[in-house]
Image (cartoon, rainbow, N blue to C red; front, side, top):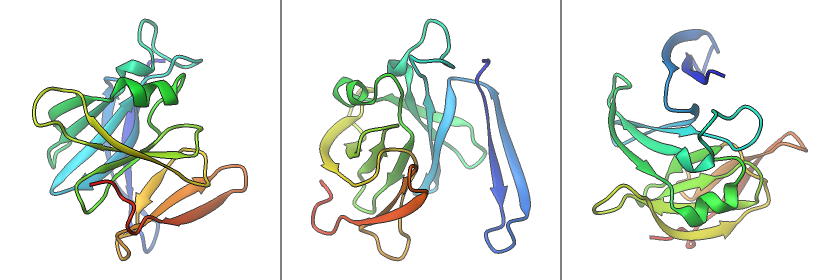
Length: 170
């Protein structure tokens, strides 16, 4: 505390640091940044456990749509039934699928939650949950194989690919 966050940008070929954006003290801890359809999509998390902001718990996590300069455009909260599964932690990974649904992982459970933006209101809509072999943390769709989701197995220190062909909720 206080919760501060920044985005550090590296050249993928040389791993040289090429840029940075500081959010400073803001609306939680930045756990996700994914670029989709010309916008940044950030998750700012809150935790019930050690390290959480007094007076705020996991229910204060939010998805924030950003412009190209990292300025907030819109914000949504996560559905209570998804947050309950992540308690006492929060969203640790998120990535947009080509179909337009957002895949989320929590901190510990071996599940991927699929959500969509609501037509109105501020609560994201759940559209399905699928079990995986890894326990939460970072996820990302493969840019060359759109139904292959990469996730991390922390205990074994592995990156694991899961084929979601034919099972991504629409």
